[in-house]
Image 1: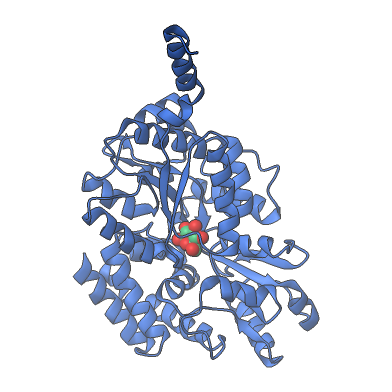
Image 2: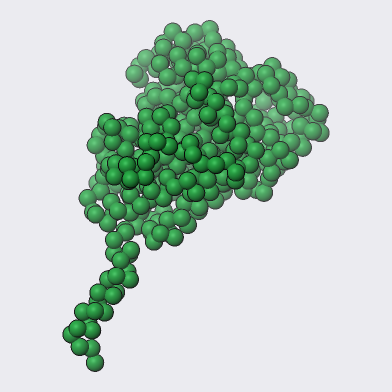
Length: 417
Ligand code: BGC
């Protein structure tokens, strides 16, 4: 028989023991981490949140670079049903903040001292109007080469250090009958390559003039023509089936020994690791020859949408705190291929590519050659980025010659500004 007092006590005990369930809601997370390596990294995050009783509702939208995810996001927001947390890049975060759609993470940011450990270059995107609106989970960079070591050894090719040596290496692979460059013909992948190629043609100052300052003369200059000429050169080294191929399938070509090189951001390393490959033994990672010293970065951040429900707000804050913890930043980025978004995370658990990435990031920041990736939304807003994508991909597919492409690039950017 239950008397009144015991009943109340029991109800209280239930409330206490299920407190975390009552107070922390689920987070619905929209993201584009759907490849094997990305999913492995996402699991680190899911498990970390699960250990704190934060439930995960998955909203994956496949498509590298996140364009498809951003389209889905717009539809969800228009329907009045935004997800709680969204993987986002650079200027997209600022756009949503400007529209007043994002929540405020100041309390957790202050309590955990984010301002002291998140580099200024990332804070520029995580804060809007002085308020924290997103939590950075990593720093990726786009000007990397991934190479199959066995192919290079077999053909006696040394790691190229200049653009000319790189072209010679690609030629030697092609002459051997293998695919020189594993590439997927999608606009964002063409643009990813262009980040680095523009630096090989004109150096970091030119990259800044063209993509950060949107200097129309630089965009239409002879140096830009040279960058497009170099894209033509690369186009000569892809296989016949490159059109529309996903980036992770291009990585797989290098992993399986079908192709020698891939030009891709360091999320590609996640694919190599996921396939059990070891840096330095099975594959090599190095900066696109001719871009050493420069780093074109992008940072995945989780932007939190403005929600009214207190439980949902608590879950967002808990997720943000979790993402920013140094142990999580190490565990996650070791798998993802990126480097931590905090400056105080030890490199102990990172492989050689990760260690190199961390050193080069710090050096580039110091030298003023750490630059936002045009291809991944860290150089300018989506309208300008998309205008650049259109020209770069049309040229890569033979619609324009290099001269016309540079002219079109200047026009397209001017029209989108
Ligand atoms: C993101 C990476 C992701 C890649 C390919 C980039 O924009 O920053 O996290 O792995 O796209 O999907």
